[in-house]
Amino acid sequence: MPDSVAGIVRKGAAFFVVRRREGGDLGGKWEFPGGKAEEGEGDREALIREFGEEFAAAVTVGAFLGSAVFEHRGTERNLRAYAVNFTDMNFTLKEHTEWRWAGPEEIKTLDFAPSDKKLFAFLGL
Image 1 (cartoon, rainbow, N blue to C red):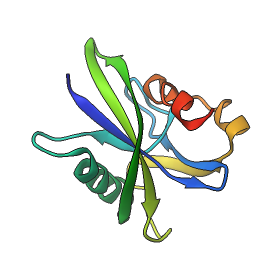
Image 2 (cartoon, rainbow, N blue to C red; image 1 turned 90 degrees about the vertical axis):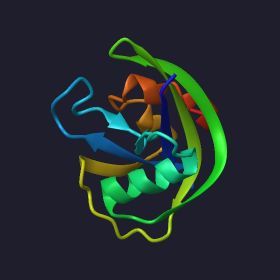
Image 3 (cartoon, rainbow, N blue to C red; image 1 turned 60 degrees about the horizontal axis):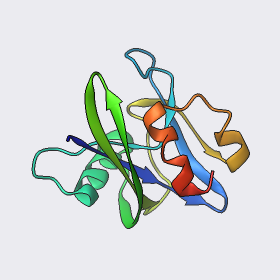
Image 4 (cartoon, helix red, strand yellow; image 1 turned 45 degrees about the vertical axis):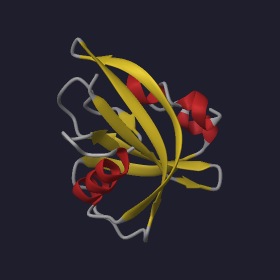
């Protein structure tokens, strides 16, 4: 089963979330940053690479938070979430149009990617 990873960045009770560019099945949806792990790449390495590609940002990857199975274009995937911290908050949006710190109540109102919604239970949402 192909694997994807999500980085969960928290600041107090708020979560760092980003909005995908328009286009494609998930265009305009909100998500936790991350993406597909490449062949032979571990979860932590994949998150470090993804945050570098998506934000030109360095991060540290912490504890495993949970995983969920979802289907995308007829293929089952496993999405694993990890706690992530920016080494500093200087970053550039390269693949997203918007970012915000969303608290528990707000996050439930955002149009989230279905795969990422499956992670809410692990985050106490």
